Length: 432
Image (cartoon, helix red, strand yellow):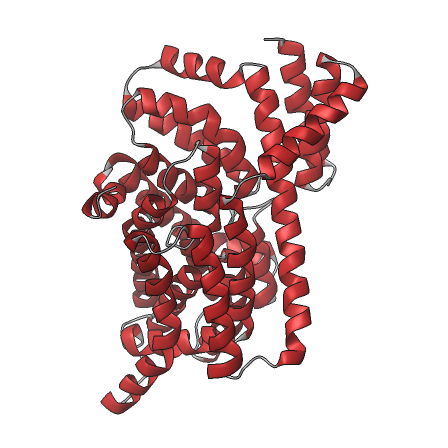
Protein backbone atom coordinates (compact mmCIF):
# COMPACT_ATOMS: atom_id res chain seq x y z
CA UNK A 1 0.00 0.00 0.00
CA UNK A 2 1.39 3.40 -1.03
CA UNK A 3 0.23 6.01 1.50
CA UNK A 4 1.04 8.83 -0.92
CA UNK A 5 -1.32 7.43 -3.57
CA UNK A 6 -4.13 7.06 -1.02
CA UNK A 7 -3.63 10.66 0.07
CA UNK A 8 -3.79 11.77 -3.56
CA UNK A 9 -7.05 9.84 -4.02
CA UNK A 10 -8.69 11.36 -0.94
CA UNK A 11 -7.36 14.91 -1.21
CA UNK A 12 -8.02 15.27 -4.96
CA UNK A 13 -11.59 14.02 -4.48
CA UNK A 14 -12.27 16.45 -1.61
CA UNK A 15 -10.71 19.39 -3.50
CA UNK A 16 -12.70 18.67 -6.67
CA UNK A 17 -15.92 18.45 -4.67
CA UNK A 18 -15.17 21.66 -2.77
CA UNK A 19 -14.69 23.68 -5.97
CA UNK A 20 -18.04 22.52 -7.33
CA UNK A 21 -17.07 19.74 -9.73
CA UNK A 22 -20.01 17.29 -10.13
CA UNK A 23 -19.54 14.25 -7.92
CA UNK A 24 -19.33 11.71 -10.77
CA UNK A 25 -16.52 13.70 -12.42
CA UNK A 26 -14.81 14.20 -9.04
CA UNK A 27 -14.80 10.45 -8.46
CA UNK A 28 -13.58 9.69 -11.99
CA UNK A 29 -10.82 12.31 -12.05
CA UNK A 30 -9.46 11.46 -8.61
CA UNK A 31 -9.47 7.77 -9.57
CA UNK A 32 -7.64 8.50 -12.82
CA UNK A 33 -5.05 10.71 -11.09
CA UNK A 34 -4.33 7.99 -8.53
CA UNK A 35 -3.94 5.36 -11.26
CA UNK A 36 -1.54 7.61 -13.17
CA UNK A 37 0.73 7.64 -10.12
CA UNK A 38 0.70 3.84 -10.03
CA UNK A 39 1.20 3.11 -13.72
CA UNK A 40 1.77 5.06 -16.94
CA UNK A 41 -0.81 7.47 -18.38
CA UNK A 42 -2.10 5.35 -21.29
CA UNK A 43 -2.58 2.15 -19.25
CA UNK A 44 -4.31 4.26 -16.57
CA UNK A 45 -6.85 5.61 -19.05
CA UNK A 46 -7.45 2.11 -20.39
CA UNK A 47 -7.79 0.56 -16.94
CA UNK A 48 -10.22 3.18 -15.63
CA UNK A 49 -12.32 2.92 -18.81
CA UNK A 50 -12.39 -0.86 -18.54
CA UNK A 51 -13.40 -0.76 -14.87
CA UNK A 52 -16.21 1.67 -15.60
CA UNK A 53 -17.50 -0.52 -18.42
CA UNK A 54 -17.15 -3.69 -16.35
CA UNK A 55 -18.95 -2.06 -13.44
CA UNK A 56 -21.94 -1.28 -15.65
CA UNK A 57 -21.99 -4.76 -17.20
CA UNK A 58 -24.59 -6.17 -14.83
CA UNK A 59 -28.04 -7.58 -15.55
CA UNK A 60 -29.30 -6.32 -12.17
CA UNK A 61 -28.51 -2.71 -13.13
CA UNK A 62 -31.04 -2.90 -15.96
CA UNK A 63 -33.71 -2.55 -13.30
CA UNK A 64 -32.62 1.01 -12.50
CA UNK A 65 -33.61 2.73 -15.79
CA UNK A 66 -36.92 0.84 -15.79
CA UNK A 67 -37.78 1.85 -12.22
CA UNK A 68 -36.74 5.44 -13.02
CA UNK A 69 -39.08 5.47 -16.03
CA UNK A 70 -41.89 3.94 -13.96
CA UNK A 71 -41.35 6.66 -11.36
CA UNK A 72 -41.50 9.38 -14.04
CA UNK A 73 -44.77 7.98 -15.37
CA UNK A 74 -46.24 7.85 -11.87
CA UNK A 75 -45.03 11.35 -11.05
CA UNK A 76 -46.90 12.73 -14.07
CA UNK A 77 -49.85 10.35 -13.99
CA UNK A 78 -51.95 11.67 -11.11
CA UNK A 79 -50.89 8.90 -8.76
CA UNK A 80 -49.53 11.29 -6.10
CA UNK A 81 -52.87 13.10 -5.77
CA UNK A 82 -54.81 9.86 -5.34
CA UNK A 83 -52.38 8.58 -2.72
CA UNK A 84 -52.68 11.87 -0.82
CA UNK A 85 -56.49 11.59 -0.84
CA UNK A 86 -56.22 8.01 0.42
CA UNK A 87 -53.73 9.04 3.13
CA UNK A 88 -56.15 11.77 4.27
CA UNK A 89 -58.82 9.14 4.83
CA UNK A 90 -56.44 7.03 6.94
CA UNK A 91 -54.74 9.65 9.12
CA UNK A 92 -56.30 13.02 8.27
CA UNK A 93 -58.38 13.19 11.46
CA UNK A 94 -55.42 12.81 13.83
CA UNK A 95 -53.76 15.81 15.54
CA UNK A 96 -51.30 17.20 13.02
CA UNK A 97 -53.23 15.20 10.45
CA UNK A 98 -51.90 16.99 7.37
CA UNK A 99 -48.32 16.31 8.45
CA UNK A 100 -49.29 12.65 8.91
CA UNK A 101 -50.86 12.70 5.45
CA UNK A 102 -47.63 14.07 3.97
CA UNK A 103 -45.55 11.35 5.64
CA UNK A 104 -47.88 8.48 4.77
CA UNK A 105 -48.36 9.68 1.17
CA UNK A 106 -44.58 10.00 0.76
CA UNK A 107 -44.13 6.46 2.10
CA UNK A 108 -46.71 5.10 -0.35
CA UNK A 109 -45.49 7.12 -3.32
CA UNK A 110 -41.85 6.38 -2.56
CA UNK A 111 -42.65 2.69 -2.23
CA UNK A 112 -44.26 2.78 -5.67
CA UNK A 113 -41.77 5.02 -7.48
CA UNK A 114 -38.57 4.16 -5.57
CA UNK A 115 -37.42 7.79 -5.78
CA UNK A 116 -36.99 10.17 -2.85
CA UNK A 117 -36.62 13.20 -5.13
CA UNK A 118 -39.82 12.31 -7.01
CA UNK A 119 -41.68 11.86 -3.71
CA UNK A 120 -40.43 15.22 -2.36
CA UNK A 121 -41.45 16.95 -5.57
CA UNK A 122 -44.81 15.25 -6.17
CA UNK A 123 -46.10 15.04 -2.60
CA UNK A 124 -44.59 18.35 -1.50
CA UNK A 125 -46.06 20.13 -4.50
CA UNK A 126 -49.56 19.12 -3.38
CA UNK A 127 -49.21 19.20 0.39
CA UNK A 128 -47.17 22.35 1.08
CA UNK A 129 -49.87 24.84 -0.10
CA UNK A 130 -52.62 22.85 1.68
CA UNK A 131 -50.69 22.75 4.95
CA UNK A 132 -49.89 26.46 4.72
CA UNK A 133 -53.56 27.24 4.09
CA UNK A 134 -54.51 25.28 7.22
CA UNK A 135 -52.10 27.32 9.35
CA UNK A 136 -49.11 24.97 9.48
CA UNK A 137 -45.70 26.61 9.74
CA UNK A 138 -44.22 26.58 6.23
CA UNK A 139 -40.72 25.60 7.33
CA UNK A 140 -42.15 22.71 9.39
CA UNK A 141 -44.18 21.54 6.36
CA UNK A 142 -41.02 21.57 4.24
CA UNK A 143 -39.08 19.63 6.90
CA UNK A 144 -41.81 16.97 7.05
CA UNK A 145 -41.83 16.63 3.26
CA UNK A 146 -38.03 16.44 2.98
CA UNK A 147 -37.49 13.76 5.62
CA UNK A 148 -40.53 11.61 4.77
CA UNK A 149 -39.49 11.44 1.10
CA UNK A 150 -36.47 9.32 2.05
CA UNK A 151 -38.64 6.46 3.36
CA UNK A 152 -39.19 5.37 -0.26
CA UNK A 153 -35.50 4.44 -0.49
CA UNK A 154 -35.99 1.85 2.25
CA UNK A 155 -39.45 0.57 1.36
CA UNK A 156 -39.16 -1.40 -1.92
CA UNK A 157 -38.77 -1.25 -4.82
CA UNK A 158 -35.58 0.73 -4.23
CA UNK A 159 -32.85 1.46 -6.76
CA UNK A 160 -30.33 1.94 -3.97
CA UNK A 161 -30.92 -1.57 -2.64
CA UNK A 162 -30.22 -2.88 -6.16
CA UNK A 163 -26.94 -0.94 -6.14
CA UNK A 164 -26.09 -2.39 -2.73
CA UNK A 165 -26.75 -5.90 -4.05
CA UNK A 166 -24.21 -5.23 -6.81
CA UNK A 167 -21.62 -3.72 -4.44
CA UNK A 168 -21.97 -6.53 -1.89
CA UNK A 169 -21.23 -9.23 -4.42
CA UNK A 170 -24.72 -10.57 -4.99
CA UNK A 171 -26.89 -10.30 -1.86
CA UNK A 172 -30.42 -11.30 -2.91
CA UNK A 173 -32.39 -8.28 -4.19
CA UNK A 174 -35.65 -9.97 -3.21
CA UNK A 175 -34.38 -10.46 0.36
CA UNK A 176 -33.27 -6.82 0.53
CA UNK A 177 -36.65 -5.65 -0.74
CA UNK A 178 -38.45 -7.70 1.91
CA UNK A 179 -36.06 -6.50 4.60
CA UNK A 180 -36.91 -2.86 3.90
CA UNK A 181 -40.57 -2.96 4.94
CA UNK A 182 -40.36 -2.88 8.75
CA UNK A 183 -37.43 -0.38 8.90
CA UNK A 184 -39.19 1.87 6.36
CA UNK A 185 -42.42 1.85 8.34
CA UNK A 186 -40.44 2.42 11.54
CA UNK A 187 -38.80 5.47 9.97
CA UNK A 188 -42.20 6.82 8.95
CA UNK A 189 -43.65 6.24 12.43
CA UNK A 190 -40.72 8.02 14.08
CA UNK A 191 -41.34 11.07 11.86
CA UNK A 192 -45.06 10.91 12.69
CA UNK A 193 -44.21 10.97 16.40
CA UNK A 194 -42.26 14.22 15.95
CA UNK A 195 -45.10 15.67 13.84
CA UNK A 196 -47.60 14.73 16.56
CA UNK A 197 -45.56 16.49 19.27
CA UNK A 198 -45.17 19.58 17.06
CA UNK A 199 -48.90 19.66 16.27
CA UNK A 200 -49.82 19.39 19.97
CA UNK A 201 -47.33 22.08 20.91
CA UNK A 202 -48.69 24.49 18.27
CA UNK A 203 -52.32 23.47 18.81
CA UNK A 204 -53.02 22.65 15.15
CA UNK A 205 -56.73 21.98 14.66
CA UNK A 206 -58.27 19.07 12.79
CA UNK A 207 -60.75 20.38 10.23
CA UNK A 208 -61.06 17.30 8.04
CA UNK A 209 -64.31 15.30 7.91
CA UNK A 210 -65.63 12.76 5.42
CA UNK A 211 -68.34 10.16 5.01
CA UNK A 212 -67.86 6.41 4.80
CA UNK A 213 -68.84 6.47 1.12
CA UNK A 214 -66.16 9.11 0.43
CA UNK A 215 -63.54 6.96 2.18
CA UNK A 216 -64.46 3.92 0.08
CA UNK A 217 -64.29 6.00 -3.12
CA UNK A 218 -60.80 7.34 -2.31
CA UNK A 219 -59.61 3.85 -1.45
CA UNK A 220 -60.88 2.50 -4.76
CA UNK A 221 -59.26 5.43 -6.62
CA UNK A 222 -55.89 4.65 -5.04
CA UNK A 223 -56.19 0.86 -5.23
CA UNK A 224 -54.80 0.44 -8.78
CA UNK A 225 -51.70 2.42 -7.75
CA UNK A 226 -51.27 0.42 -4.55
CA UNK A 227 -51.56 -2.84 -6.48
CA UNK A 228 -48.24 -2.09 -8.17
CA UNK A 229 -46.44 -2.79 -4.88
CA UNK A 230 -48.03 -6.25 -4.64
CA UNK A 231 -47.46 -7.03 -8.32
CA UNK A 232 -43.76 -6.12 -8.27
CA UNK A 233 -42.76 -7.48 -4.86
CA UNK A 234 -45.20 -10.40 -4.93
CA UNK A 235 -43.93 -11.50 -8.33
CA UNK A 236 -40.30 -11.36 -7.19
CA UNK A 237 -40.92 -13.24 -3.93
CA UNK A 238 -43.11 -15.86 -5.63
CA UNK A 239 -40.36 -16.44 -8.21
CA UNK A 240 -42.41 -15.43 -11.25
CA UNK A 241 -39.78 -12.90 -12.34
CA UNK A 242 -36.48 -11.31 -11.30
CA UNK A 243 -36.10 -7.76 -9.98
CA UNK A 244 -35.03 -6.64 -13.46
CA UNK A 245 -38.05 -8.23 -15.10
CA UNK A 246 -40.24 -6.74 -12.36
CA UNK A 247 -38.96 -3.27 -13.22
CA UNK A 248 -40.07 -3.71 -16.84
CA UNK A 249 -43.49 -4.89 -15.64
CA UNK A 250 -43.64 -1.79 -13.39
CA UNK A 251 -43.14 0.43 -16.47
CA UNK A 252 -45.86 -1.37 -18.40
CA UNK A 253 -48.28 -1.17 -15.45
CA UNK A 254 -47.49 2.51 -14.79
CA UNK A 255 -48.01 3.28 -18.50
CA UNK A 256 -51.39 1.55 -18.61
CA UNK A 257 -52.43 3.17 -15.32
CA UNK A 258 -51.39 6.72 -16.25
CA UNK A 259 -52.24 6.77 -19.95
CA UNK A 260 -55.19 4.38 -20.31
CA UNK A 261 -56.84 4.11 -16.88
CA UNK A 262 -56.34 7.52 -15.23
CA UNK A 263 -55.82 9.31 -18.60
CA UNK A 264 -53.58 11.92 -16.94
CA UNK A 265 -50.75 11.48 -19.47
CA UNK A 266 -51.28 12.12 -23.17
CA UNK A 267 -49.30 10.38 -25.89
CA UNK A 268 -47.73 13.74 -26.77
CA UNK A 269 -46.31 13.94 -23.21
CA UNK A 270 -44.36 10.69 -23.53
CA UNK A 271 -41.27 12.07 -25.37
CA UNK A 272 -40.56 14.53 -22.53
CA UNK A 273 -41.09 11.80 -19.92
CA UNK A 274 -38.73 9.45 -21.77
CA UNK A 275 -36.15 12.22 -22.16
CA UNK A 276 -36.33 13.05 -18.44
CA UNK A 277 -35.92 9.42 -17.41
CA UNK A 278 -33.01 8.98 -19.87
CA UNK A 279 -31.23 12.02 -18.41
CA UNK A 280 -31.70 10.73 -14.85
CA UNK A 281 -30.54 7.25 -15.87
CA UNK A 282 -27.41 8.69 -17.51
CA UNK A 283 -26.51 10.55 -14.31
CA UNK A 284 -27.03 7.45 -12.16
CA UNK A 285 -25.10 5.16 -14.49
CA UNK A 286 -22.16 7.58 -14.72
CA UNK A 287 -22.08 7.62 -10.92
CA UNK A 288 -22.17 3.82 -10.85
CA UNK A 289 -19.38 3.51 -13.46
CA UNK A 290 -16.98 5.97 -11.83
CA UNK A 291 -17.73 4.63 -8.34
CA UNK A 292 -16.96 1.08 -9.45
CA UNK A 293 -13.65 2.32 -10.87
CA UNK A 294 -12.81 4.03 -7.58
CA UNK A 295 -13.78 0.88 -5.65
CA UNK A 296 -11.36 -1.11 -7.81
CA UNK A 297 -8.53 1.37 -7.16
CA UNK A 298 -9.22 1.21 -3.42
CA UNK A 299 -9.08 -2.58 -3.55
CA UNK A 300 -5.86 -2.33 -5.61
CA UNK A 301 -4.36 -0.19 -2.84
CA UNK A 302 -5.63 -2.65 -0.17
CA UNK A 303 -7.70 0.07 1.50
CA UNK A 304 -10.65 -2.20 2.53
CA UNK A 305 -8.32 -4.69 4.20
CA UNK A 306 -6.40 -1.97 6.04
CA UNK A 307 -9.57 -0.23 7.20
CA UNK A 308 -10.91 -3.57 8.44
CA UNK A 309 -7.71 -4.22 10.40
CA UNK A 310 -7.76 -0.70 11.82
CA UNK A 311 -11.38 -0.97 12.98
CA UNK A 312 -10.83 -4.38 14.57
CA UNK A 313 -7.71 -3.01 16.28
CA UNK A 314 -9.87 -0.34 17.94
CA UNK A 315 -12.35 -2.92 19.22
CA UNK A 316 -13.81 -6.33 18.48
CA UNK A 317 -17.09 -5.36 20.12
CA UNK A 318 -19.87 -5.35 17.54
CA UNK A 319 -21.75 -2.52 19.27
CA UNK A 320 -18.71 -0.22 19.19
CA UNK A 321 -17.80 -1.06 15.58
CA UNK A 322 -21.36 -0.44 14.36
CA UNK A 323 -21.41 2.93 16.16
CA UNK A 324 -18.14 3.91 14.46
CA UNK A 325 -19.41 2.81 11.04
CA UNK A 326 -22.70 4.67 11.53
CA UNK A 327 -20.86 7.88 12.49
CA UNK A 328 -18.57 7.60 9.45
CA UNK A 329 -21.50 6.99 7.10
CA UNK A 330 -23.47 9.89 8.59
CA UNK A 331 -20.50 12.16 7.86
CA UNK A 332 -20.05 10.68 4.38
CA UNK A 333 -23.73 11.26 3.61
CA UNK A 334 -23.37 15.00 4.15
CA UNK A 335 -21.05 15.40 1.15
CA UNK A 336 -21.53 12.33 -1.04
CA UNK A 337 -24.58 11.15 -2.96
CA UNK A 338 -26.07 7.83 -1.91
CA UNK A 339 -25.22 5.73 -4.99
CA UNK A 340 -21.43 6.32 -4.98
CA UNK A 341 -21.37 6.10 -1.17
CA UNK A 342 -22.94 2.62 -1.29
CA UNK A 343 -20.62 1.46 -4.09
CA UNK A 344 -17.46 2.79 -2.45
CA UNK A 345 -18.05 2.02 1.22
CA UNK A 346 -19.84 -1.34 0.99
CA UNK A 347 -16.61 -3.20 0.00
CA UNK A 348 -14.82 -1.42 2.87
CA UNK A 349 -17.25 -2.03 5.73
CA UNK A 350 -19.10 -5.20 4.73
CA UNK A 351 -16.14 -7.58 5.37
CA UNK A 352 -15.71 -6.01 8.83
CA UNK A 353 -19.32 -6.46 9.93
CA UNK A 354 -19.58 -9.95 8.42
CA UNK A 355 -16.54 -10.94 10.45
CA UNK A 356 -18.45 -9.74 13.53
CA UNK A 357 -21.49 -11.84 12.62
CA UNK A 358 -23.69 -9.15 11.04
CA UNK A 359 -25.94 -10.40 8.22
CA UNK A 360 -25.23 -8.65 4.86
CA UNK A 361 -28.99 -8.08 4.40
CA UNK A 362 -29.21 -6.35 7.79
CA UNK A 363 -26.14 -4.23 7.03
CA UNK A 364 -27.56 -3.17 3.66
CA UNK A 365 -30.74 -1.81 5.25
CA UNK A 366 -28.72 -0.11 7.98
CA UNK A 367 -26.47 1.52 5.40
CA UNK A 368 -29.33 2.80 3.24
CA UNK A 369 -31.17 4.18 6.28
CA UNK A 370 -28.00 5.92 7.40
CA UNK A 371 -27.25 7.51 4.03
CA UNK A 372 -30.90 8.60 3.70
CA UNK A 373 -30.20 11.14 6.44
CA UNK A 374 -27.50 12.63 4.22
CA UNK A 375 -30.04 13.35 1.48
CA UNK A 376 -31.67 15.83 3.88
CA UNK A 377 -28.46 17.62 4.91
CA UNK A 378 -26.30 20.28 3.24
CA UNK A 379 -24.12 20.62 1.24
CA UNK A 380 -25.07 17.75 -1.13
CA UNK A 381 -28.57 16.75 0.03
CA UNK A 382 -30.59 16.47 -3.18
CA UNK A 383 -33.90 15.93 -1.38
CA UNK A 384 -33.19 18.96 0.83
CA UNK A 385 -32.75 21.17 -2.24
CA UNK A 386 -35.88 19.82 -3.95
CA UNK A 387 -37.97 20.17 -0.79
CA UNK A 388 -36.83 23.76 -0.22
CA UNK A 389 -37.46 24.58 -3.87
CA UNK A 390 -41.00 23.17 -3.71
CA UNK A 391 -41.72 25.17 -0.53
CA UNK A 392 -39.96 28.25 -1.94
CA UNK A 393 -37.83 28.58 1.20
CA UNK A 394 -34.09 29.07 1.76
CA UNK A 395 -32.28 26.17 3.41
CA UNK A 396 -31.54 28.27 6.51
CA UNK A 397 -35.27 28.52 7.27
CA UNK A 398 -35.72 24.74 7.23
CA UNK A 399 -32.74 23.64 9.33
CA UNK A 400 -34.35 24.31 12.74
CA UNK A 401 -37.50 22.16 12.21
CA UNK A 402 -35.32 19.53 10.51
CA UNK A 403 -33.25 18.91 13.65
CA UNK A 404 -35.95 16.98 15.62
CA UNK A 405 -36.73 15.07 12.41
CA UNK A 406 -33.03 14.12 12.12
CA UNK A 407 -33.06 12.93 15.74
CA UNK A 408 -36.11 10.74 15.03
CA UNK A 409 -34.43 9.28 11.93
CA UNK A 410 -31.25 8.50 13.88
CA UNK A 411 -33.24 6.85 16.68
CA UNK A 412 -34.93 4.63 14.07
CA UNK A 413 -31.50 3.92 12.56
CA UNK A 414 -30.09 2.84 15.93
CA UNK A 415 -33.07 0.57 16.57
CA UNK A 416 -32.55 -1.14 13.20
CA UNK A 417 -28.78 -1.30 13.79
CA UNK A 418 -29.02 -3.09 17.13
CA UNK A 419 -32.20 -5.11 16.61
CA UNK A 420 -31.38 -7.18 13.50
CA UNK A 421 -34.78 -8.89 13.60
CA UNK A 422 -36.38 -5.63 12.40
CA UNK A 423 -34.60 -6.18 9.08
CA UNK A 424 -34.40 -9.97 8.98
CA UNK A 425 -37.83 -11.07 10.22
CA UNK A 426 -39.71 -10.66 6.91
CA UNK A 427 -36.97 -12.19 4.67
CA UNK A 428 -36.68 -15.15 7.05
CA UNK A 429 -40.46 -15.50 7.00
CA UNK A 430 -40.23 -16.01 3.22
CA UNK A 431 -37.27 -18.38 3.45
CA UNK A 432 -34.35 -16.05 2.71
